[in-house]
Structure formats: structure tokens, C-alpha cells
Image (cartoon, rainbow, N blue to C red; front, side):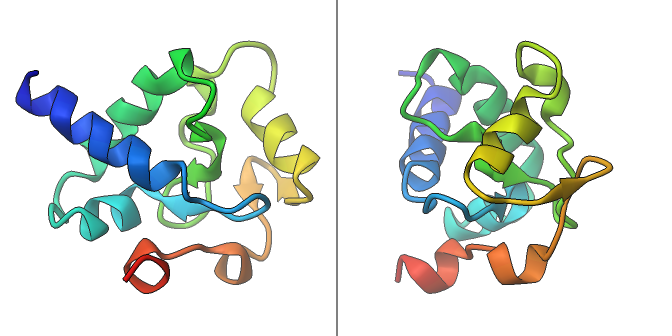
Length: 110
């Protein structure tokens, strides 16, 4: 297993714990894993996760709630549709009430 495969696996383990109707950020996952400068790698992991239906990649957004990974989902607005099906309100590709819906693994998983 390569170093990136091991990292991706760790990212997926955290992402699978994001509760229904909640969101987190790439940076929050990176911070939790002890690699605060690797938010971009978390994004790469989310993009590579589309073959694993157990990874809720749609629940991972950027640090201000923008659906920055939306173009990696098949179909038109699929990331937004998945979030909205969980009750998350999205306007102009941004999660509304982001602070309330934000799930911080540093607080929730320790």
C-alpha cells in the first residue's frame, strides 16, 4: 500500500463518520489526521472515493461551505442534490447555516 493509499483510507474512515445532514471541510479532516496542510490531499481522496458508495464525499466541502468538489460528481448538481436530500440548504453552491451544520472531527471523535 502506498503512502497516499494509506492516507486516503484514513480520510475515508473519518468521512464515513460524518452524520447524515451534517458537513465538514477538507481542512477539518486534515487537521484531525494530524496533517493540517494536507486539505488538498483530502480533496483528492474525496474525488477518488466515488467508487466506494459508503464514503459520503458530498458531505465534505471547503472551509467556508462552498461545494468546491461539485464538478467531480456525475450528473448536474448531484453533490447539491445529495446534500439537499439530507435537509441541507444550498444556495449558489454554498451550504447555508454552515456554522450550525459543521461537524468537527476534532471535537466529535476525541
